[in-house]
Image (cartoon, rainbow, N blue to C red; front, side):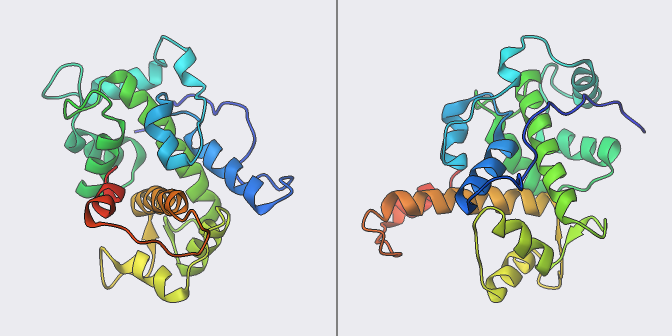
Length: 225
């Protein structure tokens, strides 16, 4: 089913080639991906900086977003669950998102912690996912719907994140030992987690030694999203 979606807001493209330094390119990438989040306090730990959203200035929800939301809410009026979100990705986008990925992003945007997303929370998620899809499609040069090890390595390097080949393989295979490529939903979750861990590490590495001592409860806190 073809669905009309709102046009992308004008702004700097992902990984702007005019950015003069790696750090500037990294900041532009993160800013572009997260610029539509409407709660700055919630997402600044992930982005590593405060990002001003463009959509929090608008009180009305885009008709296409509202139509998609109403098509999903089957059990609780005014709210969608992770399962309903998963079904919507299949129907409207032709993309499979795992149960774990859908639960992850619902927790991320469920600001009132009621277990589901209202229409404003969903709108933020909608534009957020579209930004990640744009980034993913940029690196998915063969349009296979997956990123192989080389493509994933290139994508992460645009965020100034460099991993060994062994660790890249681990990221790809951690959910499926037989996997050789990474799908969209795993890419989104992986990037969010890596960025969060990186920012937490930098905050604790006050001597810039490249290593930190961390207690168990702090480590568990780093795993929370």
